[in-house]
Image (cartoon, rainbow, N blue to C red; front, side, top):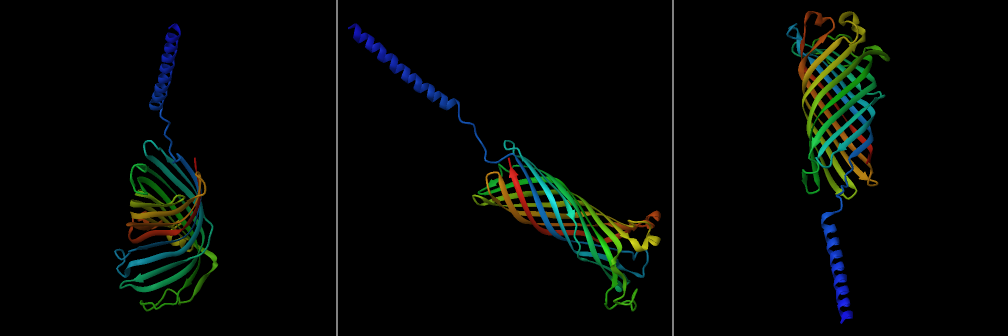
Length: 336
């Protein structure tokens, strides 16, 4: 009898211990879930190479000062300006809040090519002068900083969208060499020089031109997953306000216009900037990409003056003032 009681007690204790162990394991499974992890790293650093071609164009109206002049009175076009630059890219993703800060800055140039065309008109748009010069020594500096929110929440299937607002800066300069009058019919009945006349060869520097822009960026970044390791990202920004500053140095007319820079352009307007990148994830942290970029800014709401004219407060209205650059990108990114 005593043996039976002892056996029963031991069996009950063993069963209770086993049940308690099961409940403890169950409570541990419920109260201590494994920590959540995200596949998206918080930081991204990278480098890019940009090969591009650009143009600048400005024109002004002096017919209000001299009615014998046309409108536009003069137009200077800088076309097919090559450039190459290196840039650094950085990004921070706050995974919990969805806040994103991204930026890039670059510079370079170091190339020659393209042409500058300078045309002048009398009233009735009778052409009186049409010259061509070569362009050398491109100088590029630029950068953007954007703040966005919602990349982890604004999703549509495989597409993620990040709205953002930011600031951008773009400086684009080039040297002007040589001066040749183009063979063309001149409606004014005479020309400033016989067509084909080479006043200065391409070994003579005759000027410099720089355009600098400060801008507000409002846009969105969209990323779509094409394959598990392949994504396409498009970063499109509307520029609702851009402020442009152009400095034109006429080295051969400093006696008339003053010391260099001697022609000043000031304008504001709008534009847009678009980057598109196709990225391949080599590893979870490292990716390579290729893509394209297009920038356009128009600041035609402004004026032109020169060092001598501004002493008398003379400002001539701009009819055209724009900058454009486009090209191909290659990048390497590391995420951690």
